[in-house]
Length: 184
Image (tube, rainbow, N blue to C red; front, side, top):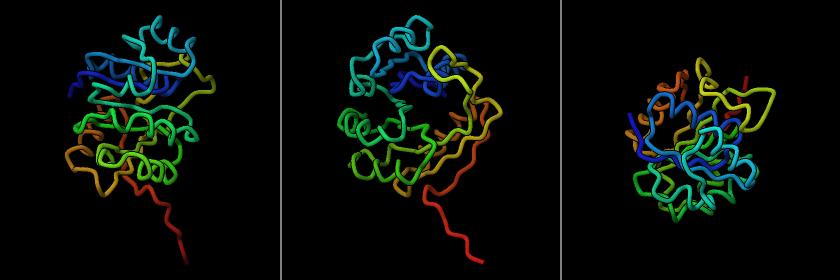
């Protein structure tokens, strides 16, 4: 499995670690990254996390067949609004947010005809230290990643997301993005 271009939106710990893992597994040819902070973009480039800096989230998504949103959950709506018109019809779009029902609601409100491209993901991984300087290619190895596919997702795209996380060494589970109420 190889992607031509990863559009990385958010070059902090989670996004940068994903990019490094993709590079190490030869899962992507080119990585274009955007973070609002020019310092973070510069560090990501200097550390070899990304191959090129994008001036905006839209620029990172443009021409990418894989897009990863690694921004705080509170910024998801804004990010999805910015990139929706720039996503290729066959792109795989994922996030690494720690919550899913609000992220899915944001996707439904913003992505329009590109909603089927979005396969929400929640890696159960991290470190005490945040930021691009603490990123590591092995952050997702032997960690669980929960995919929360949407009814609109083509089964082939969900399979592709599943295989991608397995390529990075993750144990993949699939759950509903909507919490269920347990009643005795």
